Each structure stands twice: as C-alpha cells, then as structure tokens.
Amino acid sequence: MLNHAGLLQIDSLNLYYYARHKKVHIVSNMSLSIRPYEVFGLVGESGCGKTMTALSILRLLPRVIKPEGKILFCPPDSPPLDLLNVPPRTLNQIRGKHIGMIFQEPMTSLNPVFTIGTQIAEPLIFHEGITKKEALRRAVQLLERVKIPEPEKTIKYYPHQLSGGMRQRVMIAIAISCTPSLLIADEPTTALDVTIQAEILDLLMEIKEESGMAVILITHDLSIISETADRVAIMYAGSIVEMAPVERIFSEPSHPYTMGLLESLPLERGRKLTPIPGTVPSPEELPRGCKFSNRCRFRVVECDIVEPPLKEVAPEHFVRCIRKI
Image (tube, rainbow, N blue to C red; front, side, top):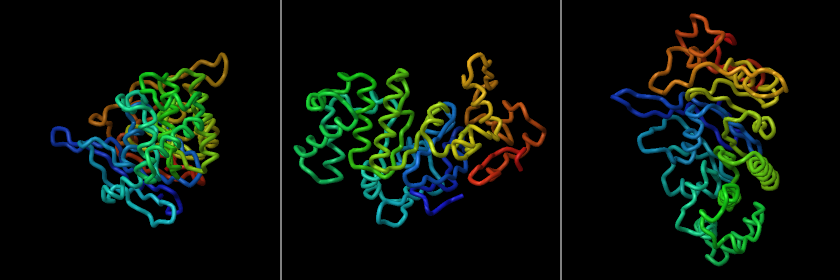
C-alpha cells in the first residue's frame, strides 16, 4: 500500500510498549499515504491509536512507546526522509517548518508563562532566522489571518487571558507560521461549543485552500469528516479497519464498525439511533482474531481465529473484514 507519489507515507507502522514482559501493541501494521493538498480524515473512538499515530510522525511519542516501520516524508525539493530514523537535527528542521501540528487542548499545549506573541515568534526565529522584532510583526499578521480581533494587543496576552476558541486560533497561527506542506490537526474542535467548532473548521479549510497544504484531520466525529475530508481511514483498537474516499464510506460502508458508527449518527429526524454494544478493549486484552469480533453482529467462528488483512474491495476502498475476503 506504500505509494511513493505521496507527500507522507506510513508503511507497516507498529507502536508498542512492554507490560509484564509482554509486547503490547497500541498501533498495529498501519499503512497509508497522504497526498499533496488533500484532507485525510483519521476517525475512531478514544483510545484507538489516532493521536499516537500522529505523534509518531514527528517522533513526539512518550519514551515507553517504541515505533517500528517506516514514515517517509517528502519535503519540497528533497528526497524522501524516513522520519523514524533521521537524526534529531534534521527532525527539528522538519517540525514546524514542513510539518505543523495542532495539539489537543490548547490550554495545556500553550506555555502559560510566555506571551502569545513570543510563542508564535519562536518557530519563525528558529526556522527563518529573522529578528525578534520582525517575528513579532509577522505574529500580528498571523493573528489577523486566523481572525483574532486586535492582534496588536493579543500578542501581549498570556494563554489564560484568552477564551478556548481564541487559544485554538493561536494554536493554528503557530502551526501555519512557517507555511508547512502538511498540517496535523488533532481533535481541533474538542471542548469547544458548536458554533465555535464550525468557525474553527471553516478557518482551517480556508487556510488549507489559501496555502495549498495537506491536512490530516483527527477526530471521532464522522459528521465533521463528511464536510471536510477527501479520504478517510477508520481506526479500531490500533488498526485501520476501513479506508476509502469519504463519499464511499458514507454510501457503501463495508466494515461492521463503520456501519455502527454511521448508525449511531442522528442523520434523520425521528430515526432511532443504534449504539455499538460494548466498549473498545484495552491493548492488553484484545480478542483473538478480528479485534472487533466481540462487538460485531456479523460474527462467525472464523472471526476468532485469524485477524483478516486489509484488502482492496474496490478502487481505493480497503476493508479489514472476513466477509470481504
């Protein structure tokens, strides 16, 4: 599945830790490709490995978690780089400049002891070698771009002096400050009210169109994906169970987990919602065979024997289900 024409290619990525001398996988055999200029959605319940996958791209994983596999990134005018093996100096040149990231919870991601202006100026000074004065001038322009009122005043504020929506806009300003070719947005609308969520998503898509960057949009909300993404991967318990163009996911879902997610959405007035029974198992207690088998309404004996591979059932439509083999 590795496509060398992509901007970013993840090939056979495994993330694991050791518990009681046992190797425990939190992401298993993940392969996907991000194309230039596209919005790629990564969807799943909490704990399925979405954020850890994103953190592995920039090698920001907790020390106890070990990666295996390849993550190839193609910077402009450069040969592909394996981000899991490049030296720290090279990686620092990529972080912020070529790959930006919007982290969850801006209140905990922004440094409480530095002003907003200082935090936006830092990557500009580091990557572009400009003076602090010039970087602060650019910071004002970036705050204007993310539609923060009175940006000259805002650069002097500290994070606690801003609302949640304003802090998220500041995080976006930092992430796009050096015009990266890839932006990773990890749950960018979490903990925001509905109207602010819509504003943040509209802002991200507007900036994406202006700058031509690709976006990895991580969320648990399929309704957000339906409005913004070009392609989507559905994750469950550390594995991709379905991946396809977004229109096909909604018109022809093929994995029982994807079907369950769609059936739990309030798509029609008066239609009863059908929740998925049970909960996502912990990485240390995954069932044998298919990881979704203990919650699946189509379960048969073979589901408990071997986990099915991710198979292409239609052009660009991949499914991990025994019914599709």
